Amino acid sequence: MAKRQLNRRQNWRIEKIQGERAARAAKRESRVVETLEGGDLGPEQTGLVIAHFGVQVEVEATDGELSGQVFRCHLRANLPTLVTGDRVVWRPGNQGIGVIVAQLPRDTELCRPDTRGQLKPVAANVDLIVIVFAPLPEPHANLIDRYLVAAEHAGIRPLLLLNKADLIDAQNETALNALLGVYRQLGYPLLEVSALEGDGMEQLKQQLDGNISVFVGQSGVGKSSLVNSLLPGVDTRVGPLSELTGKGTHTTTTARLFHFPGGGQLIDSPGIREFGLVHVSRDDVEAGFIEFADLLGHCRFRDCKHDREPGCALLKALEDGRIQPQRMNSYRHILASLPESEY
Image (tube, rainbow, N blue to C red; front, side):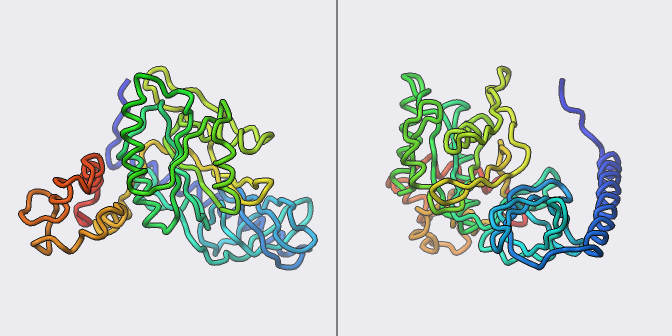
């Protein structure tokens, strides 16, 4: 059955009701915080947000006698939106409950638009974004390139990770090799692993050690299976591919941070089928295509759209084989998806 389209008034009413509910929840939370702060709270100390649950978050103490312990914390009303990976100042209370009093500056933040096109952060202080894809569901260069643009825009190093390598067969091997060959030629770090069989997992651990990493990728590519393999005992839920669409089903519902035994941390974020880039400009997109770097600014016309213009440096590079058609198609597709003001 087709999804029913809502008109503008229905959408407005839904948003109004949701806003009222959120305001009531925030008001109740504010009263809880006032009660806690009026009681016996411990001294201020630093902590790390390891999970987010609406108006409350889980904080791991990072200094003092409580270091390593996890507390469910309420938030002061004047705080900005917190996400997994945020470093904060908090005060412990009774029975494992605390209050966050300040957010510390972020080194990086990974953002994506929500269903209404509003930009929201999903993880903070990440230094490695692991772009996960698999033979099934079929990988698409355009989605991978969107993640690469987002990583470049956020200043986060990317790692391309082909999971479920055990599913490579005679039917998909040629197409996969062609896809991966483009990124290898560009110098992107790329690993092939199988969370099920264990192949390549030691190399992956070495890449993740010492980093704060986040796994991204469409549902069904095995992000939760990778977490289970990397961190036995975590038991992240694993969902099957949909028989109808061949796409994955969502299993992770909130971003959560895990620690690796040998050092480093992993933020496991909810699956995203399509990564919107409404928050980036045309220049940002071009910066995300690293093979364009030495060519931009060398077109005959300053306002060149790299489409059909004579003297276009990008089109000449495409003709000479210095830019792959797969990447040029992705570039054009991403540009076409941007708001007109950014194109």
